[in-house]
Image 1 (tube, rainbow, N blue to C red):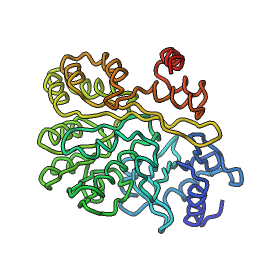
Image 2: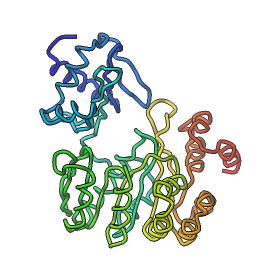
Image 3: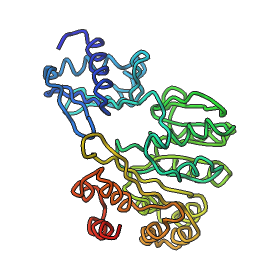
Image 4: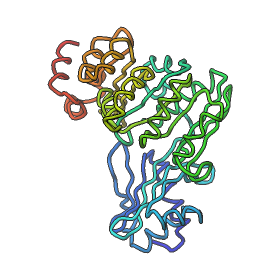
Length: 358
């Protein structure tokens, strides 16, 4: 690998964008790898990365301030722009004493709900003026993309002040009818905590918190929702029911009673996402949509979250859909195989029964 690491990095990032990959991985002892349609593929034309090359490539991305943070924390999150060609969310980290990096490609165009092939009920979320919306699922399955789509619809259809706190900023919004203030941790605010503590003083209508990381972010989200704001955020959970349990259980037992009441009062919906390998290539979304109605509010208050799945399954007419029903539709439409659907289902037995009915 040549010593001009900036040029080499540029080549690799252009290859990532051209091959429509979601991620680029740089690690010692292997060739640079791309994640395409969820599968890691080595770039066979590239040489195996040496420790020197890994350090050169990763350091070529960092500003002096980021280098200081990296030296202190042994890892750093940031956004990286390749001139005007592409934008990436990057994480540079140490593993076994060597420099490594993972870069996620962020599309320049914020796709609409229709372009993402998500259900029309998501337009209703973009019309809400207050409440707490969570978008959940595994890493790399479209949470940030879906959240950006809902926010951009608000931006184009409503006159609001949208404030985001992100680490780092991912999608860049072009202000339309709304004012959009995007704050990046490390650049625009010292920390996630400090950014969230002052957010209500900035006269927001809509708040986007990049990720529910800790008690501060969850507490801020619920307080803001209670005081007349619309709050959107993401969480790494697998279902609506698991999300509710995770939020409650993250607080000490002495606080859980209060959190249950707040959550029941503020939560308006949970969107759980999966990107499923499609027959013939590419990926297609499967989703669970939970809209908080009086029945779900009561289940949250009474800590009977295990019954939420049943309410979702029996509330199709309200716009709710279970992950299994979404997967079953994709199998029925011959977009994904039954084997793939079962692999991504949280209850494959129920999925098979559902497929016999529809």
